[in-house]
Amino acid sequence: MKATNWEFKYRALVFGLIIGVSFPMYTLDPKMSAPELADWLGPRVGINADLLARWLLVLSALLLVVAALTRTWASAYLHAGVVYASEVKTETLVADGPYRRVRNPLYLANVQMAFGMGLLMSRPGFVLCVVAMLLFCYRLIFREEADLLASQGESYERYCRVVPRLWPAVAARIPSAGRRASWRSGFKAESWYWGFAVAATAFAVTLNMKLFLILIAASVGLFWVMSSLAQKKAASSAPGA
Image (cartoon, rainbow, N blue to C red):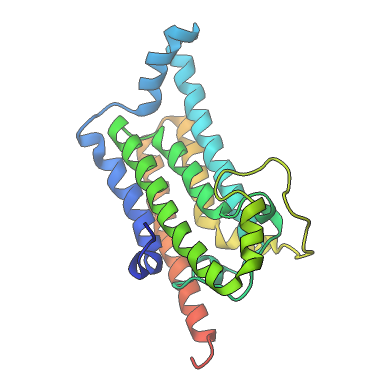
């Protein structure tokens, strides 16, 4: 069930492919998930379907904003070289910020993003995006946890016993370690993710699918550039490089 070395090294590519393959499924079903869900749910809850569809588009944008905030918060406590590293970094265990409530906030954000983006996809695209994202994130998590357990031993076991794996606790489960966040680095590392949030917000306001797809494509391109640069920087600064 664990991700392979290739999957972990090229996870940026796989994340991009999940989104890139899910959106074109409009060729199989031309109907967007949000309006279709509104048409089904509206009469059952006594809300006008068109109004409910607009609120679902707003929900999509909010989910992507929350996902961007989650990743930014997590990245503020990590270096971009760790977030986008081609290998699992096990030298230290970060247990501050969002890591006091959930062990994998970066992957949690990806799942939030999948649901938000899925509302803007076709119905089969929604299902594919959410299921594929969940499965791939869990594969990556199992890989990272195995490596951290081997490296950190009992301290990581204690951490796992009190902090949830993917679904966050409302209150912090462990005391702060005193690590300071670098919000500038966090926003810089996740700038591409904010592009997703901007794209969804723009669509909720304008209903312009062409503009939405252009912003998404630009964000995915920025994602690959950011991850490539971070991996190269980490490789060049590694001992013996």
